[in-house]
Image 1 (cartoon, one colour):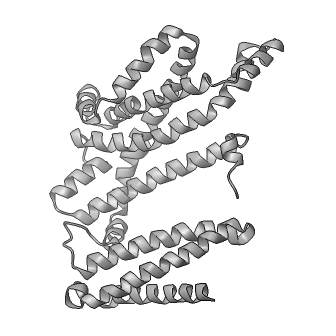
Image 2 (tube, helix red, strand yellow):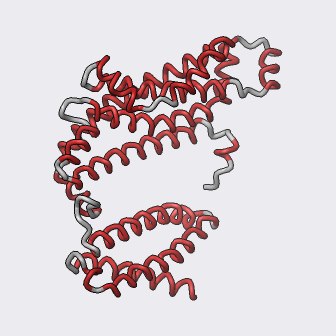
Image 3 (cartoon, one colour):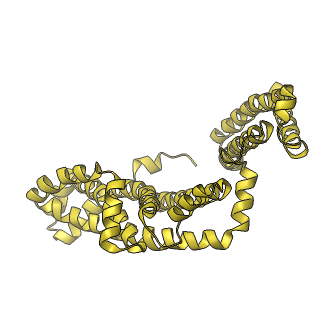
Length: 319
């Protein structure tokens, strides 16, 4: 009963806080500091609301699925509400931190521009660099597993290359490959190659010796040993590298665009709009980049669950 009362009170206070943000003029906390109590109470009671919904995730069935979907949505909504309330309530200058509504409005009014930036940075530089870097890293790892001198030579070199800052590599790649997207793809290749190499080598070497002996007992060919024994057991390591690289690639391409690019691209947009103090557009570009990175990571996670469904880490996940 007490829990239900708390949840109803949380919903009422959240609705009240939203009405305050919508109806009052900016700077209402500066004029009426007591209104801050509504936000604090809404946060405290939403804590109980989220705790109650989280406990439903262990029940199973429809309520569990609703809980797993609603908890992150409500949590994200509360973060945005706090952000909007504090920025509007204290009338924070736009150049310091724009409100979420201004960011969404800027994104909506500049959809063609953001789409062109997305195409230049993500669909061209990131995708090309990611495929080349991860693909070549996988192929070289397969060779390195068979050759001890490649392992001894490449793996320490990989650690060395991973420690080189991107701000040192990007200008060199721009000088080599020009200002368009190939130079950004080259940066992405360098950033993604060695994580894939190191993880794949570790995965291919993690084969259970009993499984390897069994395959040899059956007179299996090298290709059969690789596809039916080594590769399946290496898949969790490979997907770790793929997920890590999905975010590294986007960061690398955006940072590389700061060192020279045509008048399009996420990095170009951020650097240009910062110079013009157009911060809502800067945050709109960051929003697009974050959505693209999250979508990439989520798609790879789903693919991992489909391919490595037999692995204990996947089988142990409760649905």
